[in-house]
Length: 249
Image (tube, rainbow, N blue to C red; front, side):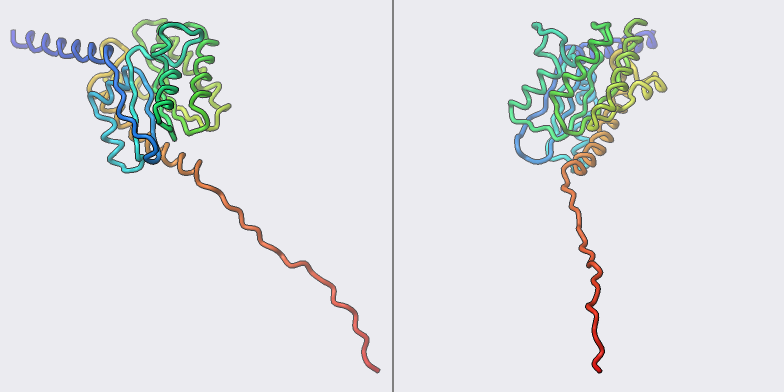
């Protein structure tokens, strides 16, 4: 009887965590013009990583980025191939809104695509929305986490297709690096929650540590991208021919 009750309690806690994850959003405070700024732009998984594992605190501990903004929202998509009433939830729309609010992102972690593969089915649409967001972000270092959503066999296949599109167009964007989250979580199924979309507590902890590592790498890329290069020119004297002399008689 006790084991049954314990099992019920665990299921109830998971249900509550799931409801919180899919029904909430988070955006940490923006303080413009305070130094190098990192933006983590994502969906409910990003929200859960901050809420359950406090990823911002881990990144702050490294004392590299002066300002860190984490913006995660349930059902957020990368962008929309055609404008509609839901565009306010898109990554493109959110990035523009944050920029208008004073955020100058010097580097961006993109954790989007899970909600796109749940709805859109065409490879051309994935390419359109990915390019839309990259163009909106501009020429700053970007790391994009690949997608792993498995709630139906069809969506699982579309996750692979979305990642293939990312890999195909990535060479066109020198500022873009892909992080293979798909393979990482495939090797560790205990990280994925029962809904095959969100994460378990251990999964959120792993994701927070990943955010920290990516933040370190992006800081290095930001420093390299913004450090002026100098060239030193050495003047080599040219060989001259001495005038001929005539010996005195």
